[in-house]
Image (cartoon, rainbow over the protein chains, first blue to last red):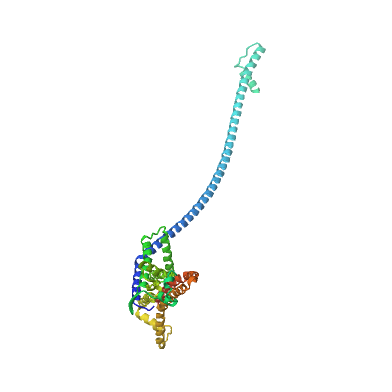
Amino acid sequence: MNINATIIGQLIAFVVFVIFCMKFVWPPIMAAIEARQATIADGLAASDRAAKDLELAQEKATAQLKEAKVQAASIVDAAKKLEAKIIEETAGKAQVEKEKILTSGLAEIETERNRAKEELRAQVAVLAIAAAEKILERSIDAAAHSDILDKLVAEL
Amino acid sequence: MSAAAATEATLTSQEYIKHHLTNLTVGEGFWSWNLDSLGWSVFLGLVFLTIFRSVAKKATPGVPGKLQCAVEMVVEFVDDSVKGTFHGKNDLIAPLALTIFVWILLMNAMDWVPVDLIPWIISLVTGMDMADIYMKPVPTADLSTTFALAGGVFFLIVYYSIKVKGFGGFMKELYTQPFGHWSLYPINFILEVVTLLARPLSLALRLFGNLYAGELIFLLIATLGLYQLPLHFIWAVFHLLVIPLQAFIFMMLTIVYLSLAHEDH
């Protein structure tokens, strides 16, 4: 168990092994490990990002849904208001129309009546004259007595 | 384990243990080479690099295969250990720590191989008598291996200390700590040099001591006859703790020492 020349051989072997390991073993293995670590880190980051994106999208969807609901409600509201307004307006117009028709009808009736009255008066005058002629058994000059007839007509 | 009990019967326990703790050596004096330590450590280093290189070549950032997953777990474990301790920018420390951890782990794991298994296989193949086969398959139970590792780390400690702080800064650190007064500079220098040298020394001796002791206990148990079976099991289970722990300690202390070398006081 003395130290002998073996130490030289072992030292050379040691140096050669270390240099070989340093040049040909360590770098490729380490490179593979580090590349895989980078890949895994990227994957994890991507999945994190995706999860965050999903959350964001869900939040956005919820917000949009809420907004849509609010909008729909306001649209319905406005529609109801418009409906009420239209009904009101239509009712008003109908009222006005009704009154117009009514007044025009009344006026027509009035004129019709007046005309009938006039006709009646004229006929009354003729009848009165005929009656008077019958009574008097003679014809009365209508022109000469028109003032009396007019007076009569006016009195009717 | 006890496969060779019959052929080893002629040996006493002491001789048996001594035989198993002797390396397969060629050469004389300092210039002798422990062929078993060299062979096994290089073989295990090649096993480590072959597996990791094959994964590195096919490494995909997509869905990894099972082998790639296993390798990546080891790499990330080492990378976390490095990043937790060393905060500078250095392309060497992490691969160095990975090599140290896996290589020492594999070398320590040879402790689990039954002590007589490899000599027995060799005797079957070559027809040699097991008493003539010397084979210590745990390279980290060889001081030469642990000192080579610690020496490499020590060289890097000194190299980075000088590279980061400059030679002057390194010397200043040796002289001016822990006492600030100029009259105590020689004492500082002695203390700091001892600290500096204690680092590789403790690294090497800790690893060697643990694995050598583990191997020794395995050998002691192997001399017990039938009782060795449960005891081997218990000791092997205990090594589930010792083997990775020693590899981890060596790696961790290397990282700590190198990050200390990078720090400017």
